[in-house]
Image (cartoon, rainbow, N blue to C red; front, side):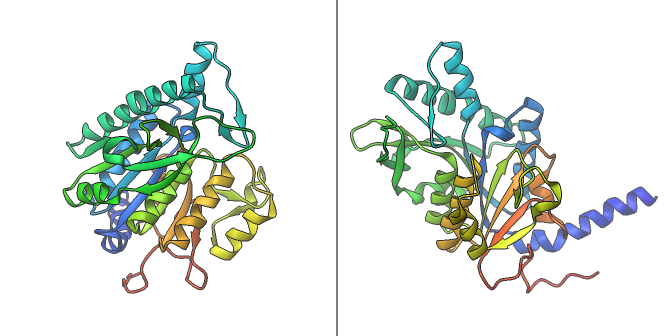
Length: 301
């Protein structure tokens, strides 16, 4: 009986959070670091479905860098990164589209749709969802792009009709060309364009550390100014920098909260959104309390 009561207590703990987030839009960036196995992908897909059935309106933005790299190596093609961005030739761009749009995107759509016909796969080419231009950079990065415009009506219509948009981070150029865009940036831009309530970056570390590698330095929460100071400090390296820049961009546009979570931890999104303690790192606006739940929701302890 004790185990049954514990399960009931967990459900009751989630209730005020379910109430608080019912009808809210959450953008989830699902990255290559959290796509390490079929079992993990299945768990994340089922968590997304649970969020949807609990009243949340999720939008998924995905990358797939490791799979692109593996495919290029199989073809004996050079893999080159400059400042964390993949140098993308015309041949590489064909592979990026094939892997992200033709493989990763459709796999995620199929996983979600095993639980109900609710997912729709998209890329920037669909209805000019993500209009892009070539990213100015020295040295030249080829077909690496940045977003000029987002057709948010497509996403809002799908959400209103009960669907989960799953978007590959490919942009459409004005002359029919495609561009490879950093998925963290796409997620932040989409969250800003549609007025999302929350953005979640799934990665393969527990969150943001003041001293990476030292577990006790994990930062559970910080505000916009503290986050901006860390970005400006030059201490952030690798894939964490674009994620934190994405958090800042989203908060500047009015997104309520940004989260960095370990997507390889089972049910990390559910633990962050639906429990008192949460996990990972939360970034919130200056002057607002670092709590998940809306202050107007009463919680009986």
